[in-house]
Every structure is written in structure tokens, then in C-alpha cells.
Image 1: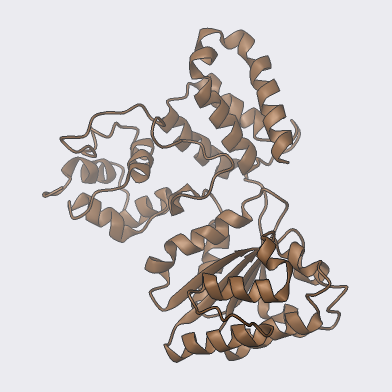
Image 2: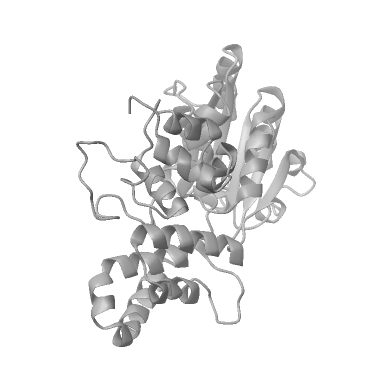
Length: 345
């Protein structure tokens, strides 16, 4: 875009919204909104979809199509619903506003965070959210590495250290002598005024292995104090429970603030269904599937992100069938939903 996008600005001003308010609603920054309206940059496909859903208008009506760009069916190239997929962009992380702020604030202050919650609640996505927004929100001084505790390399202390060094962009020596090798690597980053952030997912897998002793946990804790290492650890339960059998009385726990992830509230779900439903062009009866199947039971006033994504994905895949025979489709939908959901849970 070489000139300002007046339709996009007008759509916002008609609603008396500030650029900061629009940014908050679609999961970006006011700087990006300003650049889009002034024609300095052009929003990605994802944010174009978010803007269209927010304003209830087409991309063309908002000045969000290049002259050479043909209209495409929503979801044809980029899935609308992201079931069992990596987080592609920060804005795809719905809700979690307080948790995001806590994680960013503590990381900025070089403080460690423990993320807890049941499986498939979004702990990994929150970690990847941090990685995606880090260049803009934290700056170039922060070096972020992500480790999966289920990785075969993390079954031993030596493998863990090698993986951590690699993910932090550090040299991996042929011979690794425990955590000392990681500490030396962290000192290199410290000398360059870089701040290492180590995200460790599925922490239970590490803590349950005999080789990872009290000395290991206390060593990590010491590096967080002396080498500016920021630890972000994801687990199903509180860290004290996860490693309690090995580290009773250990100071490992007292460097963390716990962030608990729970299912979506009604307002979280309402926003998700409104925005995603608009992009997918769902009709009211189709949106009701997400309200119904996003919960574990009819009496539960909480909606699970994974269930919402799965329900939306099935509907998008079956949209022709849904609209040809809406009365008889529900049984087919329910069978698919239960089969796929049980397979991943």
C-alpha cells in the first residue's frame, strides 16, 4: 500500500474505537494498526481475517486487498480453526490476557514463571506466543530457546544440556560435563549482554527420571540467579508436586510465579465463536455446534479451546453436507467429533 487506508480508518472511527482498543481486540499492537491505516505496511492474511470479523465487512470494503489479489474462499489456504497445530501467529491465541501480561512482565524483569494446567489446555501455545512476540515486545537482547521434555534428547542430563545449548544458539561441545557446560554457555551470553530464556515443556517427563536429581534442579535455580537465566516451565501440576519426591525443602520453587491455565469463560468463548464464525461464514445454527461441543458436559459453564477448534474444523470440512441436510447431520458430526477427540486425549 502506497497511500493511507481511509476505509480501514473510517471503520474504526465510526465505532469510536482507538487504535489501541482495536489492537487489543485482534491481538496485535497499536503501532501495527497505525501502520496499516497509514499505508506503511499491509496486514497478513490472518490479521485481515481478524479485521474483517471485527468490523463485519469484506476485505475489499476495508481496503485490505491488493489490486492483483483475487478473492479466495475463507480458510482455503489458511485454516480458520487450528486443531492440533502449532501456533502460527500471536493473534491466534485467544483469551489468556492476564497470563500473557504476567509472562511478558516477568520475562522482561528476568523472573521465572511456572505455567500449569491439564493436558491440551494451551500451555505450549502460551510458550510459543512468547517466542513469537519476543522480538517486538522484549527486544533483541532476549535469546529464547524451547525444549520439549518428551524429546529423546532430554532423557539424560547430557542430552538436556546439549539440547538447551543448541536451542539457545550456543556451541555444543563434544564432551558435556553436566550443567557446567550450560553454565559456561550462559556466561557467554551474559558477556554479550544477552538474556537467555529457556522454555521447558512437559516438565514432568524430565522430573520423573532418576538421573535428574536434586543437584540438577538446584543447579538450574543457581543459574537463574547468577547467569540471568529465565526459566519458563510448563507442567500439569505445581512444580512442588512435580518434583517433590526429589527436592523437598529445595529453593528451586521460590523463583517462580505460578500461572494457571483454565478453560475459556463465556465471554472468551463468545469472542472466539464470533470472530472465527464470521471468518468461516457460519450461520447461527452452525455456531451453536461450537457452543454445545466446546463444553465437556451440558452443565459445565466452561469451554475448552481444543474442543472449540475441533468442532469448528469439522464444520468447515463438512460445510456442504451440513447445509444440504442440517437435520440429520448432527449424528454424523457427533461421531466424528468423539472419535477424533478421544484419539488425541
